[in-house]
Length: 505
Image 1: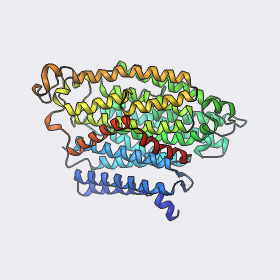
Image 2 (image 1 turned 90 degrees about the vertical axis):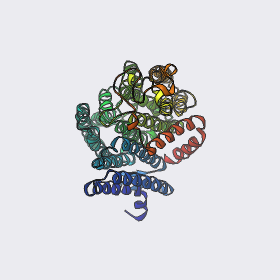
Image 3 (image 1 turned 30 degrees about the horizontal axis):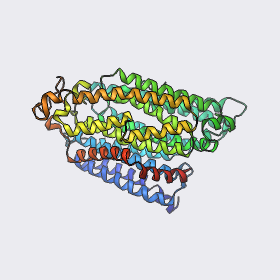
Image 4 (image 1 turned 135 degrees about the vertical axis):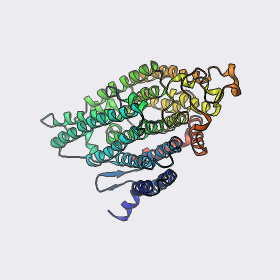
């Protein structure tokens, strides 16, 4: 490794160093504030260094990590998502001044694994990053040891992650036995041999990836994990862990799709082992994920579980652009990731502020009349939900429009229609939450509702003593502003993403 390589991986080095500093701070000072400050400083420094590294991209480190501008964009997105999730966590942990430092250590370690995963170009780095990210999440999901539902969620995630890792490892072994390569880029272009090892290996790898992305039929774990984990951790899982996998998938498969003009061209022209099966299997997964996620969310009355099911549908939307192929589809994926990160992190940040250290605000009924008690928080959460629904003047609307255009451009008419139909379905359950927050507002007024007492009864949320500090409120305001700004003025970000995708592949 030369000096140029070291400068390139400096964001990862800083993140690793910051995680060790947080661990030492937790061990010797036992002050939560010290761990929190070190975490934010390390994440901010890593983001700055990622921008510096972009000046010398593309480059490869040790043959297992590849950095181009698209990858560094994904790393910045991961670090930024971790930054906002950490701020939301501070609101939930600040009552525990003598513990919690190792919480931020696990956060940074999981983010480091996600960055390695996004930059991986070989099976070894792919699995290393994935396991580093997942093992840290086991502890974060079960962080509230007094919560039975949290412990149950952690055990479930441990079992699911272990099973998916087994599929991945066995699939990698079979693929290597047939092709003699551990290069991720060969997944989409490996020539078929005399045996079925490569197709079977590829299928097992895709099963493992499907579990991590929580797409149909590997989605059943999602609502229980989202409901049991603390709200900031849930936001982290929904964005950072899935975003890293989307980035590495785009890098592994997009060159083949771009070169052949999308799914139709890949079927006609590619001589790879996945030439016929890969596009249609993923098309079925995309369609089923959209329908299953949205229909199951319609039946839910728990906000976190609603967002869990909706995340399944959102991954289905991304798969439509992924299958469309082409530079425009990659731009749509990148923009949608930014919109999804900002919106989902903002939604879970609002939930975190409405929650107690012991349990999160769950039932939709607990949000009833919230507009009368917390108008600004209600406005922020409403903006997030409307963006997730894809309504105009939000980032979610622009993201869905770009994906729909990419799908139509590749003549994926069935998937485009399914996307449009499911976008309409999703409006109903998002507006159900919005309606609950504004219900009773006219009757009670903004000043008469007792602080922290839900209009419909039930467990108290959003008491004055539990309000987030200024930093958490500022972070939520910044995310809300980003969601609206990207919906009204998307051109600057689209132009920037265009330069990344043009040079990234």
